Length: 236
Length: 249
Length: 63
Image 1 (cartoon, rainbow over the protein chains, first blue to last red):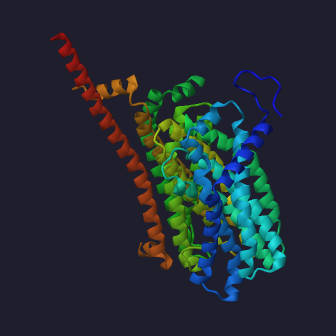
Image 2: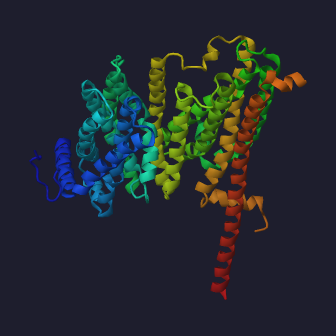
Image 3: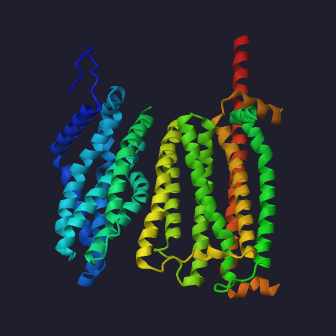
């Protein structure tokens, strides 16, 4: 819903309208390049295959490895698109346009985070539910796996966006982004992967999922602001 | 009093004051270290369980404490630099990082050395404090990597400031999460020897912590002088000061 | 004295830890100081070059 004062070129949108517009744009762009959607999934599939090969395919080992391997593989795969989060827009000047547009940059960053989550994390979560069977994860635990990965994956998108915003314009920033994001993800991994492990042995989750939710909410609150600040700094 | 702080923020004054204070802080810290070590190595009795190996605590704990304090200082300086746009604050953050990182490394190394005779392994993945220190090291390294990746100094200052602030929350969160995790396993926490320490053991420890803090101050001021000079290289006061020191231009 | 150095059998561990500590402390002070002196020297020589260039230009103008 646009404000009803059309002033020449600039129309002042309410933040939610900005958010919605950006979200729609990101989703449309993502579907125009299917390879961007598929590559992380392939990467995930490969990583998940490596472990039984490298460690052991014995059932007892797989049961122990399963939650952790799936978790780490999802995170690593979700890191892949981060460099391009602002990269494409920066290259053709669109990013600068956004910053100068006077619309809410915070809303735009939030939209990018949500879009990233929808486009790269959710497909990974779905595939991981299938892969978990191969690691002999009891089907009763799959809902916990899906929940924890969805929440944790969201936090990754949020923190990853901050890192991407800080490194706009830096050459070959992928490794740097990983170096910045992964230490920040340790608490999420601990609560997330451990929740699944605990559920697999039918132990009490001890509030792990609550912590994941709390972290997801916390990152929702500050990550868009931090990302917008980072982008402004990088573009000066 | 206010004037003192105002003067402090001005680079030429700060440069001069730092130069005056640094050697004194260094001297005082060394004295403190000697006293603390005498108390810890000679006067304090050997531990009932750990024998003389526990004496590593006298360098391990101060290092760990400083590593956390340095990061906090970096974060506070970052906030001041971003909000009040004080360039000196950014310089403080930049100078504190490598020193803090070295203390983090030291905490990890001394902790590992201490751990080997105590519980048989060089590294204990489940120990909350060591894990926190390790993640802290990664945070420092990430901070320094980001700084060096961005060419423009102003941008680098402000981007790394955002990163430092984001990281602070994480340190608390990491420690809490690893504690939660290891409490599930029962009996992975080892380093709680300081629960009830007799004064003869505790006093030298406090002295060492204080002495390390003074040392950190000295090293920081020293590094800051180089930082300030670099940042202010085109300012008049720099040219004048250098000319005064080398009158044969 | 020997007893002191032996540290109840843990000598290797204790003294390595302390040695490492002093190495790190010294490195912190020394690297800061070295950087300071290097920066000062670099700026001083640059300053002299600038003055020389400026001086040359004035001469050229006056010639």
